[in-house]
Each structure stands twice: as structure tokens, then as C-alpha cells.
Length: 307
Length: 275
Image (tube, rainbow over all chains, first blue to last red; front, side, top):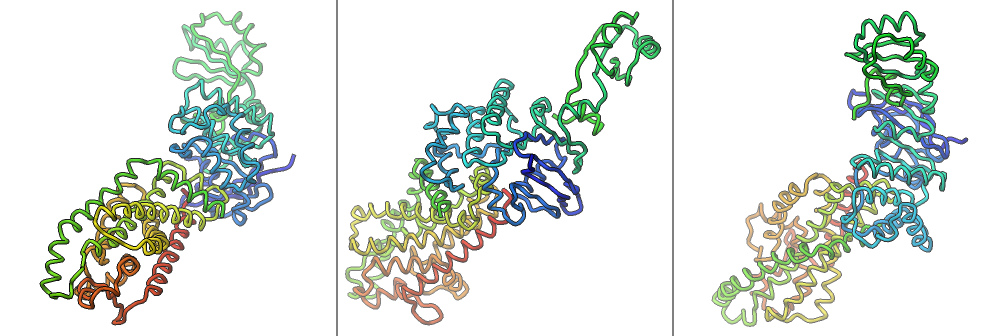
């Protein structure tokens, strides 16, 4: 697949602080690219540079074959952005917001009405398009922003924390829309979120920390790198249990944190049945899980992503 | 071009939807018309006739002050309309505009035309008061003055755009604008003659674009030639710069240049903005 975004040695320096340190990555056409990292990692700075909103100190950004430093207007026309905060005009109706967007992006006049109805259908807002946006709920506003971002058929859609501030139900719905969109339009998506479970839908994720990209791969591959499944347990006597585990069981890694024993094993399915039979000390708590991106993040950075 | 019109129309549409703003913006000019028209006219007219005898026959102070109050309304509406830039920044909409392929100069021009239109409409609505004030201007002069009002509104909104691009809060903007708007009105000849100012104030008068705006409006609306020389001098209808009197054409050029300079500065500030 071709690269739609290509970033080379991208650097941003504020006074003497390096916010982004010579990062390199490619986003392939049609994929969902997740961009993860704690607050202050340099995510927003990177996105702002890609979207022509911020001038890089050095380095190169190519989007859809245009240079983000020199061909700003062409780049702007090639991308759609859903910002973290609301950027709708709440005093206008949904339809008016979309019409303005068509004019800003020079969508051909005779196509405007059809396109507006088309994107409103994707996000299920056809019936309420004549209402002022101030009457919308938080979830509806987000959907309208997604619709607006699609209106000029961008090559890449940037979604910067699209579900922040929404309740879990609305969040789940929103992801349904986003996935539907990918299936239907095959649009490339560049996604940032700090809800790591949401990043699982990405084809590939890049993890950024302290201005550098420390890992980049598919979520499955990243999790596989951790080397196995995770078992957390508490027993009536952790020390004795620990001794027993070390003597009798095959584990990849054993750690004790407060009153919980953390085990990492190659395959939890094979391990757990013999483990329960063997262990003589009564278990008070047991949790078996496959690794998540949170564990990946923890392994790479040594800390959990801040919620 | 499409982008300019889109931004322009949006601001006009929002103006008409904001009823409170529509009504509130009339309170000030009407108040001034009452105070200066009703309260001061008797005094001014007595002063005139006692000072000049018969030469002041037919002089009507309200007729003199009305174009000034229209200009004042233009100034206030044009500058305050630029506040939409700050609102757009605070409500996030400016980001939507700035990430789109619209050129930065289109944003500034669109905002300027929006403010000019809104202020011209406000000024025209004041025309409705003319019969109630017992005034009569020729219809032709009123039609002639409208394009000039638009130009003046555009130039003055440039001042607003400049401040709006530098100030982050609407409260701060209102405060700063009050501080500059008041002297711009009082030192323009809108409300009283400005012939015999101390020289340091006179410098401000001559650099104040409102001075020329008010002067052109009076020259168009009031039948200056029909007034006696004495009345013209006393009421400051003989504006001179560096000792020579200026023509309407020169004044319009000055205001046009003023508009262009300010829209250029506003464009630069939009270029630097990362929203």
C-alpha cells in the first residue's frame, strides 16, 4: 500500500525544550492509524504540524504528495479534522454549518446538497438538520463534526480524541459510525485517543513518549511482543504461594505488587488448569487476561497512560 | 472569493439572529440624539444667533449633529462587530476556518465586509428617525451617503480587527475599545465643532479617520453651500489640514488607505495565528 502521510525527521523545539524529537513514520492509504501517548508527549504538537497549523522547526511532512510546509492550501484541502473541542457554530443549524464548510472547501455548487444529505445520513442526523446546533446533545455534535469533516472527501481524516467528554454509550455508538465509515469510504484515519481500549480498532498504532516514537506496529504484534498472557492472583499466603509457583510452574515473569502476584505466562489456557490443581494454598482472587494496549504502554514507558 | 462571501454572510446572518444585540446597539445613538439633539440644540442655537445676529437664520443644530451620530453608530458597530473574531476563537470556530484552504486575506476581508455591512444597516435604520426629529434631508443625499457609510464602516472595523486579533477575552476587548472609541467620537467633530482645539489635540483630530468620515457625511447630507460663511466656520464645516481645506475626494482616499492598511495588518495576524 502507498503511504498517504510520510513524516521524516520532524522536530519542534520551543525555546530550548524539544517537544518533538526528529520522529519518522508513514501512514498507509486506507488504514486506521492510532497515535497514542500520555499528555505532553508531543502528540498534539505533531498533529498540528501535520495539519499545517504549526510550523515545524525542521523535518519533512508529505501528505497526499503535498509538502505541508510549502503547499499548505493543497494539504488543507486534502485533510479533514475532528478537533478535540467543539468547533461548530452553535447559533447556526446543522445544515448551515455544513453549507459553510462546503464553501470554505470549494465543493462544486451542484454537488453540495447531495453531499450534505449523504454525510448526514452516515451519522443519522438527516431529520434534525434544520435545528440549531445549540439544541444538540454532546454525541450529536460530535457526529455532526464527523459529518462535516467528510464533506469535502478528504484523503485523511484526523480524529483528535473524538470521544472525550462523552458517556460510554455514546462513545460506543460513535465508534460504530467511524468503523462504518472506514468500511464504506475506505478513508484513511489518523486517530489519537487516550482511551487505550478504543485504539484497538487501529490497524497500526504508534506510541509516543517524551517527544519520541517508541513503538510502532499493529496492536496484536505489540501485545505479542510482551511475551504472553497475564494472571493476577491473591492468596491466603502470598509468600508461600510465590515459593510454590517458582518451584513447580513454568512462568515468563513473576512480580509482586502490594498483595497481588502478577504472573506472565506463555499461554494462559494451558497454564491455568494445571496451576489451579497444583497450587495448595487457597486462592482468594484470580484474574486472567490477555494483554491490552495499556500493558504495552506500561512495558514501553514504565508507567500507565494518564487518564 | 467564495470564502470571503461565506465568512461575510455568516456574520450578517448571526447579527440578525441576535435580537438582543440588534436592539441594544440602538440605545446609545438614540440616547445621544436625545441628549445632544434635545438638550443641547437650544443652547447651541441661541449661542449662534446671539453671536452672529441674522447670519444664523435657518440653522438647525440637530441637522448638524445627526450625520455625526450616524457616523458614531458606524464606528461603534463596526468596531464591536470585530468582536466576532474573539468569539470565534473562544468557541473554537476559528479553528474550522483556519484549517480550511481559505486564504488568510480572505478571512480578514470577509470579517471586514461583514462588520461594514452590519454597521451600514445599523446606520440606515437611524434614518427612520429623521421624520420624528423634524429633519429633512434630500432622498438623493441619503442614497449617496450609503456607499460612503459602507466604506467608513469597513475602515473602522479594521481598527476592531486589529485589537480583536491581539486580545483573547471579549471583556478585555470591550474595555480597550471603550477607551479608544470615546476619544475617536469626541475628537471627530461628530457632536460639536472642533475648530479651536489646542494644537496637541488637533493632531489627534487630524489623524482620526472618524474626522474625515463625519466631514464627508456632513458635506453630503447638509446643504453646506446654503449656509452663511459665519455658520460654516462656527460649526466647523470648513475642515483644514496643514492650512488647506480638503476635498471630499481626498478624504475618501484617506479612509480607503486606512481600510487597506488595517486589513493588511489583520491578515498578518491571521497568518501568525495557530488558533
